[in-house]
Length: 579
Image 1 (cartoon, one colour):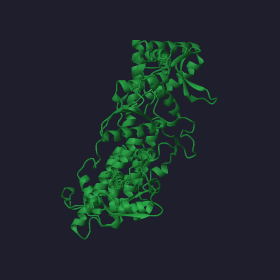
Image 2: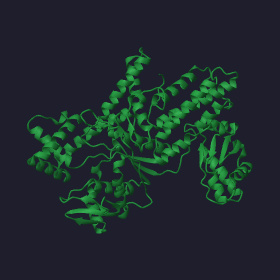
Image 3: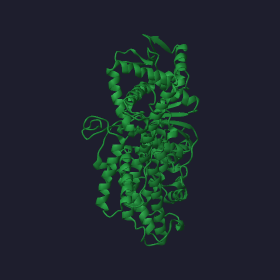
Image 4: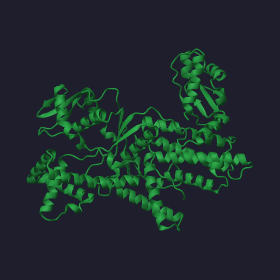
């Protein structure tokens, strides 16, 4: 249900019927104090000033003439300029009945569009680290939400699978193989990362090795069979290991979603030539650059973006321009969303401006950078190991499972080993994901094991426990869900508040779809679980005085569980049958 939209339309229609034809832009919000109303109009003063009517007089006119009066129990005015909305309980009950049998909880499909989501994007020959977590899980929530609404979502895992580093790696692997210290069949991602570090040192200090590496880069670019075979092996090893991480994190990225930098190689020479022919790019000191007057450096001079080096090599910028062109022309994108950290923002704006100048993408194409902050330690420093290295994502997830296992053993020491292992993974990894997703993506946040593995507060454990508690209660009931044939009856305040919260689910989905903020779903689920807890404490469910009340409250409980499960599924978090 779109409760805000319903109220807004009713009041706008009423004002137009009263002869007021202005853009009202009503601010409709849930009331912070429930006793004053379920919803509130917060900008009545601004509207009344525009109409040159006193706020209380305008409110009275709205109250007397409101469209669809049956929806509302009462509408009141409070000073200095608020309209308070109370829904009719029978109308709320009817709406709950409509979504009770809906697998989509009443969420409507919207006009289908092609949406490309660029997320995760790890480098080849390196293990994923904690810096990849936010892009991976926030981007995946957006993919799930947009698919749920009916869009055609194209997931793009834009991996770093091309460049000088591969020449270095091939040269180093050949060096190792010549000394019989290496066998291609024994290659692992851990080996590759170690070899890459050593190859980089050798490249910087050994001119012969550096020359050899560059020769291998040229061979690779020219399609040399041996170099391509080694390159494919390196990419395959990396992505198979990354896929294990994705599976643990319960994200929807698969190998088929890999669209690496190499995909755009053949486009790069034409991109550079085209930009030069269109007078967008110029030669300067041997390099090819695009000067952007809208971007200034610290000295106030126009900034330049290099698209080709002196040695004719291409850069990330060239690849990203080609990538954007490909996404519009080949993938037919209507909307493209990038999930990278905030440090990439200016760079992306520059790439978009160049692409628009060259008419590779139209000006009305929706290009969005859903940037995010970084994970910090308790000392509020970037989250790293003691020796200053990035923490491997696999190590973080393993640590989460271990800590969850200790917690579970305390609560249930007699659990079987198999169940303990499974539950530890689910709880540990869910806690890490939820902790991250519950933070506004625009901000940095402090990583804290104690707060995330907690049964209280806005945590995965609190939400999962609420779900388990409800499903356990439903199992204890002598009335199966299929026999709950009584209409929902809302009497107590806690029932009404829970009902309204359930009906707000669609609005939360739409906020995420528009702005890419998963934390609003986390806040919603926390509020929903909290409202259920209050309802459960104040209303007897299984042992109420009348069978129709029992059935009504069981239906309300079932709807709560159903909503929690769908919300957690959107976040890529599993529910737990028994805790």
